[in-house]
Image (tube, rainbow, N blue to C red; front, side, top):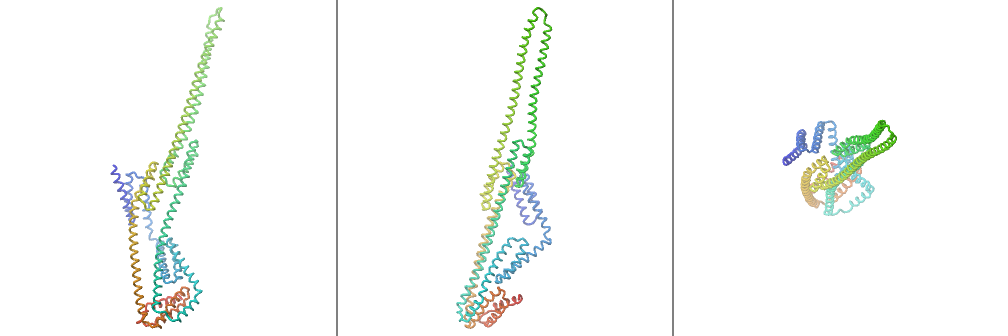
Length: 567
C-alpha cells in the first residue's frame, strides 16, 4: 500500500513538471490537461493542500490564454514602437558620448528616459539617469575650463612657434595617450559590471526587506488574533456568550487575512458551538430553578399531609371519647386517656418532623454536591483548554522559528540544511492539526531539490561564462595591444622619412584637432569648422607616398559635413 502511494506521488510530481515545460513552450491547453491529471492523482493521495495549489496554477494558465488573445492589440503595437524608438535614441546617445559630443548625447539620453518612464522600464531608467548625471558632470567641468581658453590658445601658439620635438618623443606621447584611452574604456566596462552587480545585490536586499515587512505584519495580525481569541474564551467563562461571538468573528477575520484556512475552519465550528453552550447554560439554570421549586413544593406537601394526619388523628380521638362508657370513673379515665394520647401525638409529630428535616437536609446537600461537581468539571475543562492553548502557542512559535531559519538557509543556498528544518516544521504543524500548512510546506520541501539543481547548474554556467568572457577579454586586449604596437612601429617608420617642416605641420594639425574637439562640445561651430578646414590644408601638404593620411582626411571631411548640417 505504501509503495502504491509513493508511486502515485512520484507520478503526480512528474506530471506537474511536464505541465511546467508545456507552459514554458506556451502549450497552455496541454498544460491544463496535465494539471487536471495531477489534481486527480493528488485527490487519490488525499493531499488537499496540493489540490488547492494546482487549481490556482490552472487559473493562472487560463489567464495567460486570455492575455495572449489580446496580444495584437493597438496598445501592444504602440508600446513596441516606443520601445524601438527608445533603443534607437540610446544607440545615438552612446555613439555621441564615444565621439565626446556630450550635449547631443545628453539630449538623446533625456528623450530616451522619458520614453522608458512611459513604458515603465524601471531598471533601464535608473541606468539612463546614471549616464545623464555623468554627462552633466563632464559638461560642467568643460564649462569651467572654458575660462582658460585664451590662455591655452596663447600657449599653443607659443608651442607651435617653438622648435618641434623629436618624432620619437611625439610618438611616445601619442602611445601613452592611446594606452590611457584604452585603459579608460576597460575601466568603464569594469565599473558598469560592478554597478550591475550592486544593482543585483540591492534588488536582493529589497526583496529581503519586503519579506521582513510581511513577516512583521503577519506577527502583528497573529498577536491581534490571539488577543481576540483570549477575550472570547474569557467571555465564555463568564457566560457572556454574545460578546464572545463578536471576539471570535474578529479572530476569524484576522486569521483569514493571514491565509490560515485550517485555523479559520476550527474557529467557525467553535463559533457555531457558542450558541449550544448558551442553550446548555440556560437549560441548566432553568433545571436548577425547577429543582429548588420542587424541593420547596415537596416540603409544603409534607406539611399539608402532616396537618391532614393530625386532623384525622384528632377526629378519631374524639370518636373514641364519644364511645367511652359513662361510669363513676369517667372523668378519671378521660384525663388519663387525654394525657396518653397527647403524649402519643407529640411523639409521633416529633418523629415525622425529624424525618422531614433529615430529608430536606439531604436534598440540600445533594444539590450543593451536584453544583460543586459541575463547578469542578468546568474548572478542569478551562484548565485543559488553557494548557492546550499554551502548548499550541509554543509549538506554533517553534514551527515559525524553524520556517524562518529554513528560509534564511534557502536564501544562502544551503538547501539540505533548510530541508531538515522544514521537515521539523511539518511535524510541528501536523501535531497542531494544521494539515493545510503542512501540505504547503511539504510541497516546498519537494521544490528544494529542484532549487538546488538549478542553483548548481546556474553556478556552473556562470563560471563557464565568466571564464569565456575573461579569455575573450584577454584575447581582445592582447590583439588590441599587438595591433597598436604594429601601428606605432609603422607610423614611426613613416614619420622618420618626413622632413622637419612636415613633422612640424603634422604636430600643429594634431594640436589644432584637440582644440577643435573641445570647442565643438562648447557649441562654437563656426570656429570649429575654420579649424577643421585648416587641419585639412595641413594634412594635404604631406605627400601620400610618405605618410598615408587618407583615413584622417576622410574623418575630418565627415565631421565638417555633419557640422554644416547642424549649423
